Amino acid sequence: MTPDGVWAELVGQEPAVEVLRGAVEDPTRMTHAWLLTGPPGSGRSTAARAFAAALQCESGGCGRCHACLTVLQGLHPDVTIVATEGVVIRADTARPLVELAQRSPSSGRWRVIIVEDADRLNETSGNVLLKAIEEPPPRTVWVLCAPSPQDVLVTLRSRSRAVALRVPPVDAVAALLVERDGIDPAVAAVAARAAQSHVGIARRLARDPQARARRATVLSIPPRVRGVGDAVLAAGDLVATAQADAKAATEQRDAEERSALLRSMGAEGAATIPPALRAQIRDLEGDQKRRATRAQRDVLDRAMLDLLSLYRDVLVVQLGAGVELVNVEHEESVRALAASSTPEQTVHRMDAISEARTRIAGNVAPLLAVEAMTIALRPQS
Image (cartoon, rainbow, N blue to C red):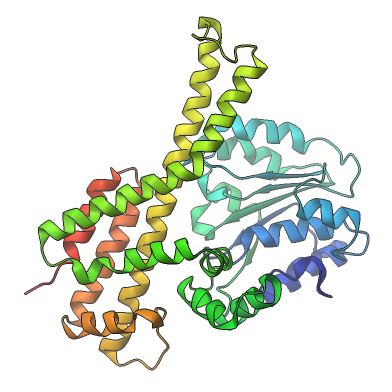
C-alpha cells in the first residue's frame, strides 16, 4: 500500500477521507451510523471498506497489518458486507443483520456492518433495520452506501451521519490506472474519460478490449438510426446484447450453485428431484432469476449512460462550450450529429434516454423502454 494506507484507493476524495479519518482518530467525532453517498464510480464501497479497516486497525488504517488486510479482502470476522445481486434487499436478508448487530466484536475493535446498496432497501426491509440502526450496541457501526441521501428511506438517513463523495477528476483516475494497473498512459486517459471517472469501469475498459468494443457498438447506434425500422432493430440488438452479457456473467455461477445445492442434499446425479427437495431448488432458481434481472438492468443502464455521454458531447459542440469531449475517439460522429440537429433536439434525446432509465428501474419491459428511446433518437425534420 502507499503511505496513505487504506485510503489510497479513494481517488480525489480528500474531504470525505478527512471526515472518516477524523472519526477514527477522535472518539468524539465517531457515531453509530454513517451514510456514504456519491455518484456511481465515486468509490462508496471502497470508502466503506477503508473506513472499516481503519476502525479495526491499531494504527488507524496503516494498510499493512493483519486487521487492514483481512478487512480489505473481505475476510475479517467482525466486518459484514451486504451487497444485493437482486433488484431489492429483501426483509429475509435484513433480519439476520439485526441479530448480528447485537453481538460484541469477536476479535476486532468494532463490529462493522456495511450495506453497499442501501438504496435497494424497500420499506419492509428498511423498517426491519431501523431499530438496530437507531439503538445499536456501543461497539457496533453501520455504514450505508447509496447514490444520494434521497435514495435512502428517510427514517434511515435521518439517523445516519452523511458523508458525500464526489466525482473524481479524470486525470486522477488515469494516474491510478497507470500506477496501480500498469496501463499505458494514453489508454488510461481514454478509459478514464470514457468511464466519466468511474474507477471500476475505467479499469475494465482499459484492461478489456471486448469491453471497449461493446461500448463502441453502443455509441454507433445514433448515427445509424435513420427511421423507426432502424430504431426497432437497434433496440432489439441492444437488449439482446444485455441479455447475453448478463447470461455470460451468471450462467457458470448458476450451474455451480445448483450443483453444490444438489450435492449438499445428496441428490447430485439424480434423474429426478425428490418432491421434498423441490422447494429449495425453486428458492435457488428464484434468487438466480433476480440476479440475472439485476445484471441485465445494469448492462442496459451502463449502455444508456454511454449514450448520454455521447449526446453531452453533441451538445457541447452545438453550444460551442470550451470543454473537452468525453468521447474524443468518436469526435467525427459527434460533430456529424451536432451538424444534423439542434440543441433542443439533443436535449429531447437526452430526456428520452433518461426516461428509458427510469422506466427500466420501474420494472417496465426492457425492450419496450429501449424501443421508445431509440425511436426518439431518429432524425427529426
